[in-house]
Image 1 (cartoon, rainbow, N blue to C red):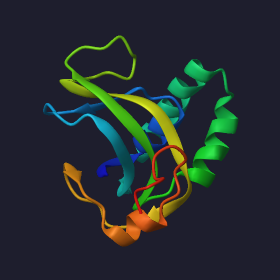
Image 2 (cartoon, helix red, strand yellow):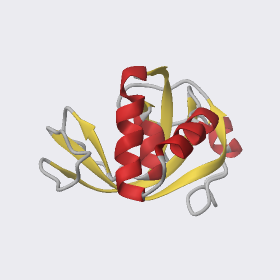
Image 3 (cartoon, one colour):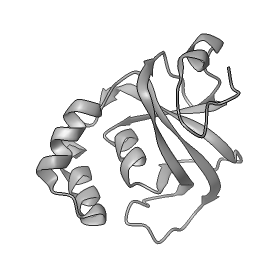
Length: 142
């Protein structure tokens, strides 16, 4: 399985409500993708991201803020999605382009698995894959 490192709060948003991941270049990859969080957090974007999620899910921002504080691991694989396309336009408010991976079936890991990330798509080490438990994604990967 391939992985993609994404900064917080964007990585957490993917697991909750963000259907696209904006990228500066086109990706040809389609299929299951592990979401890894970088060590860096864009703290200035947390409130805006929480408000977008609240608008889409109908969940109170205060509840989302508490959940984010508890669940927003850094430097770890937090879940998986399925990449179905790479587009240059999308109806989602999350789309800023110029390219975006279209993401479906987000599923959080039972627990984050810490590891070093890399730029672009990368292959996690075997011991990391063995430690992952993501329903619908990691069965048979070990």
